[in-house]
Image 1 (cartoon, helix red, strand yellow):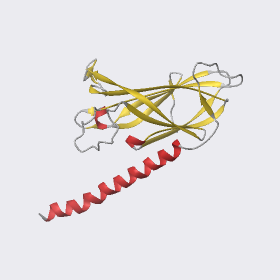
Image 2: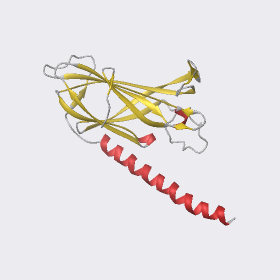
Image 3: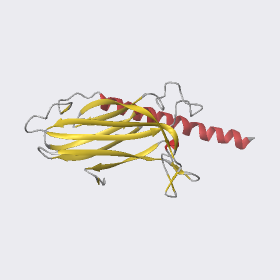
Image 4: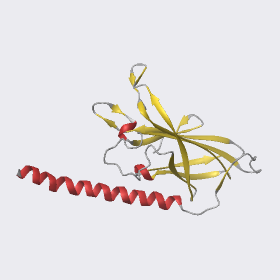
Length: 198
């Protein structure tokens, strides 16, 4: 009995500390989303102005369906119709909402564990922005996952570049990587070549 009580005193501060850390990260992400600037503009059907470049941003994530986690708040966005991606390019923040679609994949592909195997909701973000050539810090944050990542990117004048964020899911010892475990990181690619961070 003493061991159980002692364990509770040890574990509870860790859980509360984790919640506090998560709240702090979420606040950092929110702050990044509201930074004002005139660095980029979202491109619709118009051609970019002369002297500007186009950056195409792709990002995906798969989450379980709504209500999958028994203790998850009803305000949580997993499995909801839209999912927010926070981007900040050169000090200008924005929140883009990706539309979710029902997604069911095989657990195994070519005999290997499929990280997105199973039933869930997949969100695909596809945005085009126009900006002047130069070097930029590009930030991605997910308030729902308390996740943030920043890279540095050089934009060449007059070029269309594709920046892609591919999800890396958490793993457990039994089933390996799975979207059911939540996001761990994003692998980042520029025009099909992986960007390796220092």
